[in-house]
Length: 310
Image (cartoon, rainbow, N blue to C red):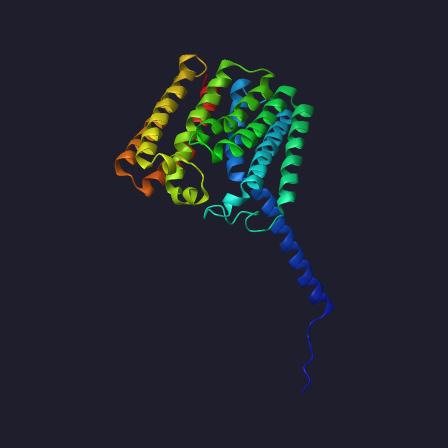
């Protein structure tokens, strides 16, 4: 008996459409992945908090939205170019080998162009709708992250995270500049909070990923100096972090609600880092890493609430 196909042109067209939609979703998801949205969201949170504190409330809706969009493009640009430059070592690490470039979902050139374009858009948006100072600070963060951290420190020094952390602290200055058109000592102390937070946060992660970093030849602290020194440095920088957060109260930029919050959150983080140094397990390292994420979000939320209460 001759087999008669039941497929129709409509069925074929439907399948083709579904495949095309799936392809576009994959491509769009891959480009968004280049921007590392989980990192970008945290940076935008600190930017928003800085704007609220600097201006005793958020600026106009236009300025706020332009700052967040420009900030998202700036962070995304730095991250996308980082993904382009680090595509070789990303392919060697279990945590990153599924990223768009090592997995071949996006061409290397397209990723680089994407990063440059959204970086330029960041400057245009911030300069056009916010102010030149905010735009210049955002571009400086991109250049620092790409040229100083990605292309130099990451592959050559155990201080890569310490110095490179400055790039992740610049969004606070962008937010302050967006709200006021200037910078102040309070803004620089908020910058310092993120700067001091970065080493214990990423060194905790580097303990978990020590084998990955060793395989890729990245001189993270536990790979080069060993785990014992890493535990010690995590505790040391946590103490410096807590002291830095308290400086905002000392200079009268924050009030008693913030002081109580900083002591409570700082005490919790310090306890976890000391426990990590004593127990020395990957489980405790993961706990420090994840708690430090919440710590940063909560300490900046406390800054905003303190301003509201005052």
